[in-house]
Image (cartoon, rainbow, N blue to C red):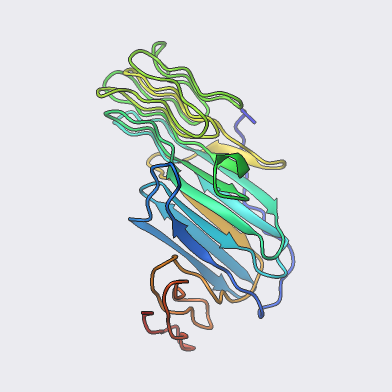
Length: 286
């Protein structure tokens, strides 16, 4: 799991029926965490026989996706966020196919777990079978923060300065460096008021005043890992073979129903919305 390799998203084979299924995506607040439903974008778009759901956040947020009938595999691309500061480490990317069953909920987290400090660590992106840290299927970690004291470690790597934070491992948080604390399950360590936080991950990297360590990966069987591009933030993309999305939106919000060509966001579970027309228009839900 610790080695880097590149890979491309593999699409699930076959086409499911275009009728008689529902997809539900909702934003919630993580219990006991720093997540918030504010400042987020999410949505599902559909072409003939294919659906893509995208989750993107500047702040830690949790969502769920209900798997529609006829879908047995989803292709996931998850990317962790870059560490803060002028020398923040790169986040990591995990690409994997996950087996699923109709009616199952997948829980998606974006942007959580970065350690605190003058420069915060990058947040992780994850997909799991239930809300919480213990049920995760994959984790794309964040990079450690880096500032004037030294560069942060990339995902899965320690800070390059000897006194910096160490990377998270498969079973423990990374040790803290000078002026910092160790990482923990999910969370990067703190760099203190003038330091650099560790990146979030399966286990977070340690914090330090001379660069935070990167978080660790969780990669399912057959999955691949790589380092994300500079400037990345935590995102998750889920693709699967299916027809038109009929029900997707944020919990407690409002929106218009998707049209027959897959455009438009659906009304939320807490609001109403009229069906979109064949040219993609629809009225806003109450």
